[in-house]
Length: 154
Image (cartoon, rainbow, N blue to C red; front, side):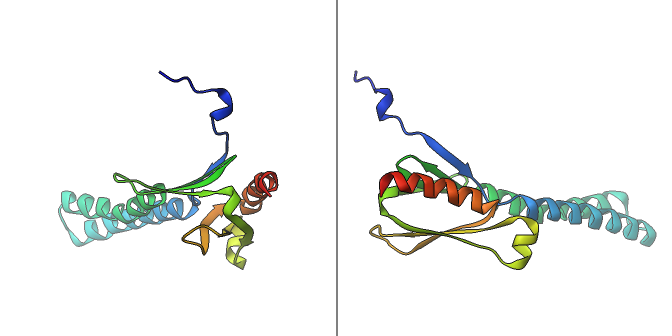
């Protein structure tokens, strides 16, 4: 059995997911809609079980987006950027930091007001192109952490 030295272990710089803000707003709107639906159906004389069932169905939409958000995770270590997608079946894409050429932070006016944005990573890997880390809270902070690691490679 081979032992792994402490020098062989990767150090995680950060792990981030897209913002939870939209999911929270969705749940809030679904709860308000469910209450209004129950009141409306009670006023129309619908059975209580039908009202509750339809009200609970309104929660399915934000639940879907919550699961979709949780299917994406971005991790930067001291040697690579790792993008995990999927819930049950997972796909992991690894980009060595040595292949990353540029890091850009992009945010629309509404994203800036709410404190999140996109991090665009240009890379020279076999697939090439851009990787967009979408709707990241405090994107400048994470871009700075990534750039700090890149300075060690270039």
